Amino acid sequence: MKFSRSVPALLLALGCSGVFAQAYPSRPVTLVVPFAAGGPTDVVARSLGQAMTKSLGQSVVIENKLGAGGTLAANAVAKAAPDGYTVLIHHNGMATAPSLYRKLPFNPLTDFEYVSQVVDVPMTLLGKKDLPPNNLAELIVYVRANADKLNLAHAGLGAVSHLCGMVFRQAVGVELQTVPYQGTAPALNALLGGQVDLLCDQTTQTIPHIKAGTVKLYGVTTSSRIAALPQVATLDEQGLKGFQVVVWHGIYVPKGTPAPVIEKLQGAVRAALKDPGFMQRMTDLGAEIVPDAKLTSDGLRSWLQAEVDRYGPMIRKAGAYAD
Ligand code: MLT
Image (tube, rainbow, N blue to C red):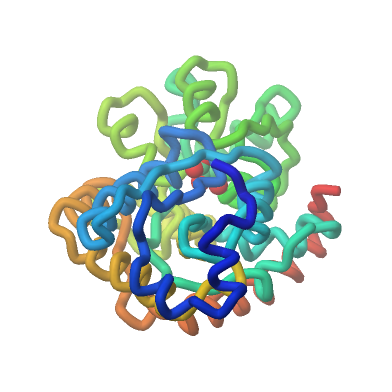
């Protein structure tokens, strides 16, 4: 895919947006995923894209654009033609980026139009299968005693696996060596292969491995237990009071995308979230479909603003800058 100004963009610039929007979409729409194929964001994007295809009448093609904790993908979409054919799905990383990356080449709060939120996804704290501790209490003792020997995988600064790992390290009061990957699909493979010891990752990827018993599970990161793993205690209830990391997802298009195009995309997202196949897949993977109030431009824009404000002080306090 080329992130360049195309003929439709020229039509928009010439004031033909109404006519263009009526015909939209007349070709496949690209949904840009900022992390590796097969990982949690990719899983949500592919299921969503498949469901959106039904009401858009055009394919939704996934493009995985990796690197810099999701900021390369977000920057590319910010600079793409505002014609509705280049769409971004991103998570909390959109809100942490302005604090983590002090030289960010785009502004999440001004360079986009805001389509909708999609699903919220819990995370799970995992160890490699033969890690000795069998529960969170044992894990805390173990990491404090072996901090210099253990490592923690994540998907780069700006990834939720990094954020969750940072919250865990702060809660336990240890520094661990961290190992970055371009998504938690390769990070989880490294955990399964025993090359890394710990990983905090989303249920949309981890549930099949938890059920297969190929990883050690120490808890979920939500404030209460989740329906997909009812027997699994939260980190909070096991003693890490206030530990809560939930992954939210937003759909964005470049600034200047015409309102009728945004409305078509919103309609397709709404229809997808009510699609029985999509709903079942998300339920099986622990994801929760967001309420209607979050399916609006204003809903996403104000949520993003609140999250930027929430994470800023945390990141500045930790001094966890990417540059
Ligand atoms: C992924 O899809 O790889 C993840 O969302 C990365 C992360 O943020 O941890």
